[in-house]
Every structure is written in structure tokens, then in C-alpha cells.
Length: 554
Image (cartoon, rainbow, N blue to C red; front, top):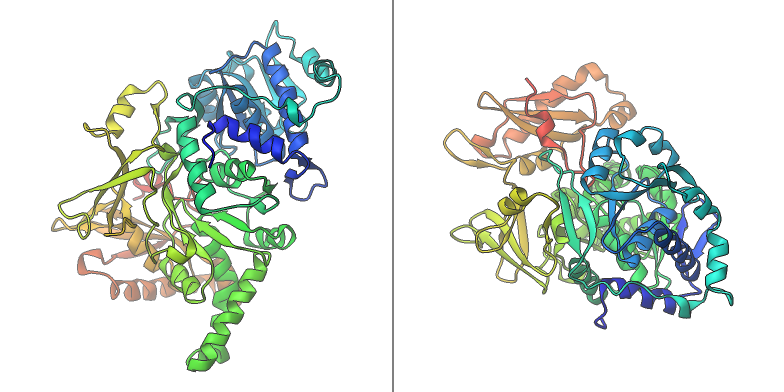
């Protein structure tokens, strides 16, 4: 890729792809071309200048994925200001805290979210602007945003009397060393920190994606992961728009039924997903197919199994829209049974590894080079070491260094110091090994590891993955109480209802699952009890369970 700063990538792409489609909201007829996208950005730049927003100022955005969410984000970073993306499912107290802690001066949000916020709790912002059509929701005393916003079309016409064109696209000359994004994490340990992501961090991810993922102008994506999280934002959105791709924002909960319908209509070439989405599709579409008696018999016949697997692959590819080149899984551990089956049928799936603090990518391999059960190969712009006596066989903390590593945590020197080793490596908090070819294999989180009765290391994620494959288990969480391992299980009530099993029979079924599981694990990993849990576990944006919320269950 030509050596441009992160911001200048968009200046080049928007100029080059001016007449091509860029953004749309799924279900809407409105499509923003790259030219219209650049025009909307220019209007917001005029607004920022009139509001005395300067380079380095912070602007917050909170709402579900949408075209105008993307426009607000891009307008901020191309102006040279710092975007503060906030997850739409944060509670109002967290939102107030992030807006204040980040020193944000403007807020873009939806009407529904604004109704639950209180302007007196965020006194430093000049105003709040709607993500539905950029109308004004609120302005602080002595501000004149209401007049400015209604005059933006006129001010644009005055600035460009011959009309806004591709040659008028000029963006900030900010260095890549400067902060572009302030991303507040919401991890499994419950402590939220503002990750300072530089243009250089983002450029590292964009350059790698350009060389390896290789989207082309006009390729389609369906964006359904939250844009406020670095994983979805980096590849569904920021990278896609540097290549002239066409992004459709789902803007609703990505249930399997909704996703399959959207895939059919959008026909994406690339899908960025977390494991949970693909695992649900596998359970709904593939397991019922494999469970049929005639299918099970046919798969035992060598000639037929190849044909059947080919038919299943075709069925799954069609369910993904029929044009899929690659589906990238990341953000949480991938169920081994699902992964093994998809690789067996040669489905184009691969797994990457990263974290917000690396904006986000650390390792990745494309489908042909992907090593099963790994998280791909370490990026060329990154270095990885395992804090163990033998990184190839003995599990240790994964530590990283390189272009993608953040500048630190905003206004939090203590947390910044704690997350880096004395010799400058970032502690990921993940445990794993690495092979001779630099492929990473993750065992679990260091903070979730349980110490066994004789000092053995117990990785709950590995046991949960086995339990999740047993009958009528939707998901599970392993906790330790009084030196006993207890599995909290959310049953798959849809499967229970379809088969006609009484819910009163579930404890008996789960007891059988417990016995089956205990034959599959080491003696020190055996669980003492399965408890049915009534509600879905609360999760991070990456769909990892917030384990700390369940440590005190009796």
C-alpha cells in the first residue's frame, strides 16, 4: 500500500471512488455514494470549525450501527479530532462517565439513548446531535448550534459555489503519531479504560488487511458487530472504505434468522463475525441435518460422505449469500466441534486474534494457510513472546510489541504502567503457546484460570467448550466454590421444545451431561454440579462472558 497517513487513506479513497456506493442501512433505500459521504463529512467539518472544535478535541458517538454513525466517526477523524465511540448498550451512568472522562466537546447519539441521558451530568459538551438526520437534540447555554445546523447546506454552497466535487476533498495533515480514537473497553474483568489508539496503530491494521484480506471496489459487507468496538470498526468499516467497498449496516440484533435473510439480500464477499454467531447458525442449520438417521448412515459410506459434505457446504454458502470469499472469526474462543466440521467441509473460515489495545489485530492467516485451532500467524508488524520456560509446549502469558500497540490508557498512568512489562511488552492477559511458524494457540485468560487442588492449572474455557457440545446446552460458565467446580448452564430451550421434552426433565439430562463431561476431562477438571441458569450471561461487545459478575454466586 502507498505510504499514506491513516487519514489520507480516506482522502484518496473518497476521491478515487467518488461515484461508487459506500454506505447504506439495511432495509433502507438510501445509499450514500463516496461522493455523498464526503459531502456530509464536509458539512460536519464546517460545523466543527464554527463550533471552535480544534485538532485533538474529543467527540463522542453512541448509537446502533448506521450510516450516520459512520459519517460522524469519519468526519471526526478526518478533521483531526479524536473520536470516542461508546457502546449503545452501556448504561447511562457509564455513558456520562466516558463523555466526561474523555473531555468530549460534542455528542452524536440517537434520540432513544438521549432520552436516558442528562445534560446536567455532562456539562462540558457544547451540544448533542441526532444520528437519525443530524438535527439538534441539545445545545448548552450561549451556543448557537441550532442556527449553524440549519445553515450547513447554505454554508457548503457558499464555500463551493461550483458544487462540491472530488477535487475538494482535503483532510487533516495530522501525523500518524497522534491519537485518532479513544476507545473505552468493557472487558471480562469489569474495569473500563480509555485506550488511546493512534493513526499509526490503525495504519498497521489497514496495511495488513490491504495486503492479506484484499477487498476490491464494489465488494459488499454486512456490518453487524458493534462499530464502537475495534474489531467490527476496523474491518467492516474503516478498512472496507479504504478499498471502495460497499457497507450495509444491519442496525438490529444479529439473530440467526435475521442474519441469514440479510446475507441473502446483501450477498457479502467478506463476513466479520464473533464465534457465537456462527455457532448458532451451525446449531440451527447443520446439527438437525446431521442428526437425521439416513444422513448418519450415508456419512459412513466413503463415496457418499464427500458428496454430502459438498452439499452441506453449498447449503451453508448459499445461506451466507452465495458470494462469500472468507468469514473471519475473532473476539472470543471458537467452539472446536464447529471449527472442525467447517474445516472438514472446506468452508472458507479462519480465526484471528487481537485486542482493543492493538486496534485490534495481533495474528491472522487466510483460509488456505490457517492452522486448525490456532489464531493465525503473528502479523509482520508485530512481535509476540510467551512468558514461559518453553513457549512451544508450556502455556504462558502472551505478550506483544509492535506497530499496532496502543499509546496507553487515557489519564491513567497507573493502568498503563501495569499493562506493560519493564522492557516494554504489552501484557495481553491471555494464556497460550506458539509454534515454530509463529502461529498462536490460546488456552484461556490468565484472570479466569482456576488453580486445581494440587496446583494444577484449570482453563475453564476449554471445559466449557466441551460442555457446550453436549445435548440441550446453549452456553455454560465454570465457577469455583469451596474447592468445587460448578457449571452454570443456560439450556437450549428451543431444542427442548422442538423435541417435546418437559423442562422438569432437564436436571436429569444435565446430570447425564455432567457424567459424560467428566469422562472427557482430567480428574482435577471434573465438575461437581451443573446448575441451570435462567438468563443469558451478560457479555462484552466481543461476546465474551463477563465472568466477574458470576464469581459470587452461592
